[in-house]
Image (cartoon, rainbow, N blue to C red):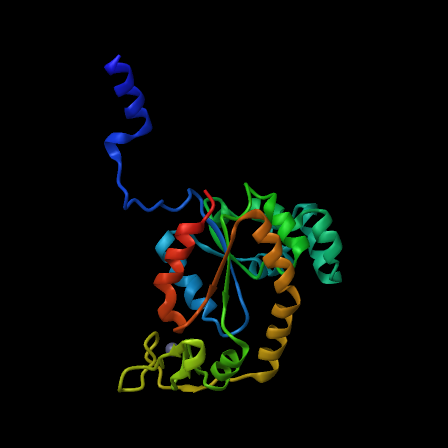
Length: 259
Ligand SMILES: [Zn+2]
């Protein structure tokens, strides 16, 4: 009797109980980060990809490759690629969705086989629906946000390395009432870019593209958040300290990610 209850206990794992155990990442983790411009999305994406050990796959790059290569190289000689190229050139978004082109391309993309962080996709609910049909769908759709005033402040305060594109922020951005304090990020005293060593660091503020990206975000935000909330994969996170919030953000994703 005691032996069978011991065996049952072992199966339940009582020899290995650890209350501090934090679930690991799912096998083949699939995550999308979504947010307005200036929420440090590139930095967060790159760092998270390294931490979790999955590649960053850009849907825009995948599509651009098809447009550039279709019919020109042997790998891209199949009629499927020619049709996709024509649809992309014609801006036939409806056709792309109907033929599930995006997920078909992901299946063909060797980098996307064992999990990924996907960028530039999905941009709307119809695209999100097709993505859910790809290998069980996303494990987490992470909405990273900041109040709009702060996004504008960051835009006005932005510098970049002209040689490698690394972004810098010379001013502290503070809003006491919102509990926001974003520290400056600049090269050490000598003024050389931390990534490439260049001294060619200049303003990169671009109000027109900022405005355009912000409008695109606002137009799709409610729909996408409701969609992923329904699937239980939405992780909503408001930054308080810019990229310095990364560890807290990562912990929140890990606590909430769908396995
Ligand atoms: Zn640089």
